[in-house]
Image 1: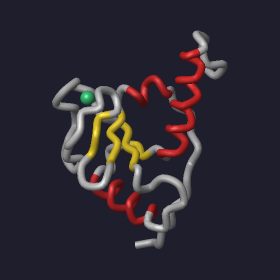
Image 2 (image 1 turned 135 degrees about the vertical axis):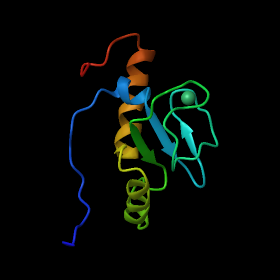
Image 3 (image 1 turned 45 degrees about the vertical axis):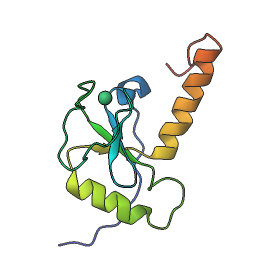
Image 4 (image 1 turned 60 degrees about the horizontal axis):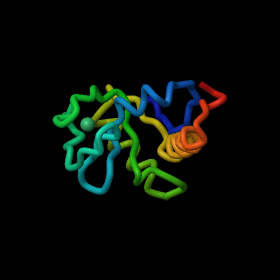
Length: 112
Ligand SMILES: [Zn+2]
């Protein structure tokens, strides 16, 4: 098979939509972003057992920042769950931090 390398691709998404369908992978298990349910097995799970969220996006705390292991983590996760869209944890945190700040100010995000 042809050798492939990782590169990040930019695409526009609705943060509100991601918030409702995101599973975040931690050290051993994963959590549902929408309801913060913990201890999920990300290998096979399709819906959150607590809130019923239909997982379409995945992110990983281990793959955040410039951790040298991040390519290995992304590889492991995407090979197990090719059906999910992998989003960058830092990008997501940055956006949710910004939308929270706008919500606190009682206004809408200028991007929405
Ligand atoms: Zn949930």
